[in-house]
Image 1 (cartoon, one colour):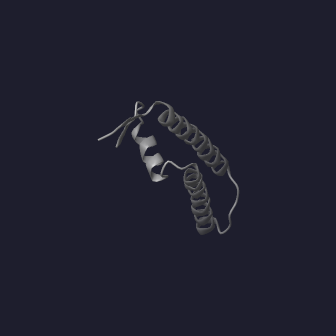
Image 2 (cartoon, rainbow, N blue to C red):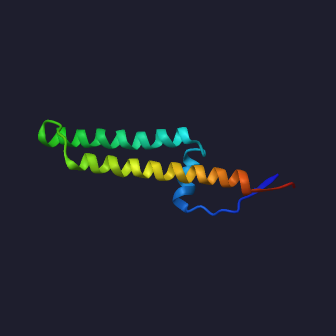
Image 3 (cartoon, one colour):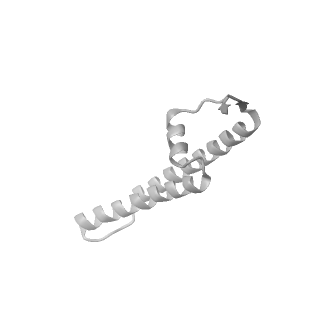
Length: 93
């Protein structure tokens, strides 16, 4: 049995969706991991160079970018799964 998909995915979407196993929970964990990882790296660099951590504009900008990317990919995943459910053709071998 094969499933013929009528919709094409870009390489980035295909990689992210495959990495998350087409699961919204895994997608959420991926983006939270990226966000927390960046915060830990940023805090480590700040502590290494200045001896203390502090808030700056880069933290807010990165958080907005990651949040926007998460909502974009979550929406695209939902649309892809809905399109797969409604329009895919199943071919029996």
